[in-house]
Amino acid sequence: MSSVPTRYTDPRAHELRDRYLATYGGAELPVPVESIAEDLLGLRIEERDLGECSGMLRPAERLIVVNATEAMSGDTPTHRLRFTIAHELGHWICHAQHAAAPAPTYCRTSDLSQDTDRALEREANVFGAELLMPEAAVRQAWAAFLDPSGVAATFEVSALAAQWRLYSFGLAERPV
Image 1 (cartoon, rainbow, N blue to C red):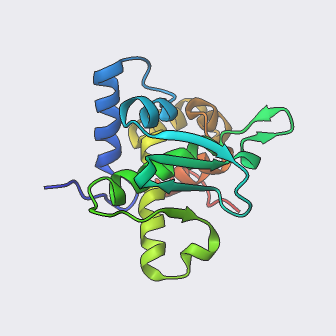
Image 2: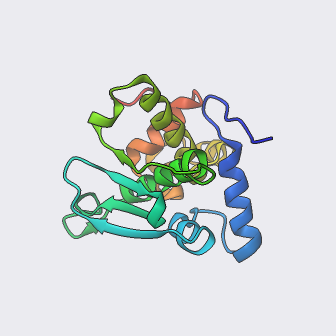
């Protein structure tokens, strides 16, 4: 029987992270999302200019494509890419891995027009957030910093991703 996610957590993300640590070891945080995708799951990650699309999963090719324009802010790498990869891993684990003929997913606003699409995107978001920012570790980081920027730095995610995660656990105000 597969694990069913709660509203803001997903046990499949914990299982994936634990499987990676058991296989490769290393530090638990920040979560090595690129290595999980490539080394553990055998997926390739490529950066391309995707226009309005943040990322896509092409299951038949075992390929995650992330928007290269979101990778850098000037000369500084952004942490948005880490969440995009984690989100696409959510699509892989939750929707494609065991499907007979999984369709590609394109994460852009126009793909969210159907209720089922929104549900799939939300599930991938919850998975990605839980993979990168496990609830217990988020609560521990919040207790240590009491500041979203400290939490974001701990997990190497964007300040907005950290703020949403803190909000989901009732620890911070809703992002604006």
